[in-house]
Length: 310
Image 1 (cartoon, helix red, strand yellow):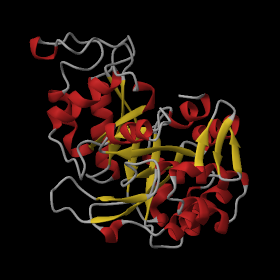
Image 2 (image 1 turned 180 degrees about the horizontal axis):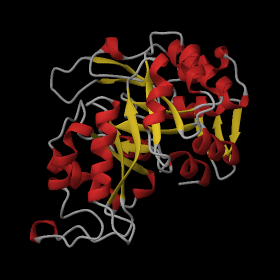
Image 3 (image 1 turned 120 degrees about the horizontal axis):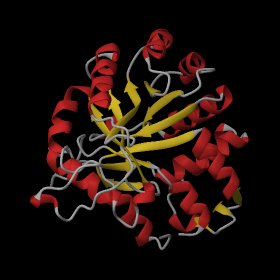
Image 4 (image 1 turned 90 degrees about the vertical axis):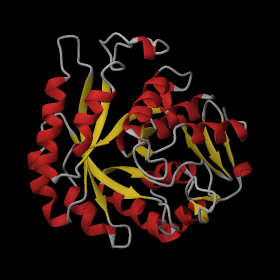
């Protein structure tokens, strides 16, 4: 990849194979993650996302695959790696109980060499009025991502997060039925509000493809179809929002459905007559638009190859 696209996609995808529409069992999900960590595209891979209620199951299924372990005969294809797996834990047990479960998991998989797996983020749904209390429960070296209802005015929610370094918002961009996909207007509202408040965010769901287009929403033969948001639309839009783009400008890039309107070189990314420098993209990715959760790591890569960007 050219440098701007490499910077844009570095650590972009948090692997959520346990969640719909893939909804894999634990064993194949961790095997996929281990394989992706050793693939030629491993630089695009971020955390493994796991519900707090399934951390014990993860420990068992991934025992032979985590760093610092020796693969059993069934996993000879996986070479040992030195870096601990990074996990983001979805707080399906409630915030306090999920943090306790994640902390116990981290302690069990820590060692002097840096550990086999490390939890460094919690993802939770809490009302904006409870965000401060939830943040107070987080260990100092963990991040927290709090999911904002996309059908509500985002300004109050992001204001509640402002000033809490290491924590950010979470915006849902899709789902397995059309009604779960937020209109582009709502994503533009969110990007404007988050940029104004100076808070970071991650996205989740629906961003399997780089450019906005109609796709099947799941892998069943009779799956409903709808227009899905593209991760290039959203993350380049985030860079524009951070630069100060208004709602109308963000709507234009969020609704762009022509792949030919995007191009990349070492100096920057270009959408029609707008250019974003590689440095701007790097700043956006490190401080504002951090990652997105996807149950597929392969579909985004396949599409980037199809469009000739990789």
